[in-house]
Length: 385
Image (cartoon, rainbow, N blue to C red; front, side):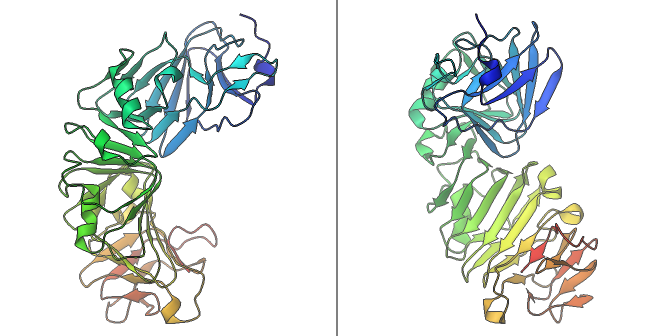
């Protein structure tokens, strides 16, 4: 094969042999008519590329030899991290020398954790295989494509690996014997207790809870089954949902962002656990909305990097976000700021909370927010505006 185009492609990643190279997500829109993002093995041996995806990445490009582009060595892809890496066929294109090209994954893929997604069976080169372990997942854009991938003998899926979709919340694709994995955003308005009997894994996207009160928690399936989050946002939808105290949410490294909007209340009674709970729990409280918490250390405990941020109008109490912490609850975070200004370490709360720092404009209830360290002048982790 000739190799006339590697120097002219949109962006290129050269792998130099057997050494393991690690990145986060592969992201390329593939919307250009000419050239493509390509990954090439420059050494005449096998190169390994490990993807430690925390949220979700979408790649439309070429991995390995394809068309006029030679790859002297083979490429192995290793998928780690709880998030989703998606490979899409995208639009037809031509290389810069006018040779037609196709977005292809010409590499063997091993999924140790998180999800791998394909927009169709033709995205994977015919000579290559995908192996998905018990902690991995296979996802597709729709049920028909997911079924086709599962039926293809190039795909080996562990019997307890998750299955699911991206950008298409269709629970008819859920396997009753497996966890359902979803990457994308949607407003959830149904009780999914029966539809998700084995639990739910989410990666990236905005998940809006469209059901009021305690019934809102059921949109995530049975309260006693796993709910695993990877860079996901959970929001209310001009309503007042309550996330159950009986539910435990597991945060992988991508973490979670809770957002309360409108003049409504998002109540988070659930316990947050997992590695991401120590670093990546973020809460945004907008304008006159209220965040209500009801679990000690609901945002990951002493090492949490929770951020509470509100809307821009701070002129009156009626236009200000509130943080509601009931009596007997102590929520620990690392840093705290109001209007971008870092506040001192210590306890914060409303009158009657016995906190060292009282702010009745922000806090309600008799519980306490414990701030472990005085934050920097900029880049705060917990913010109320």
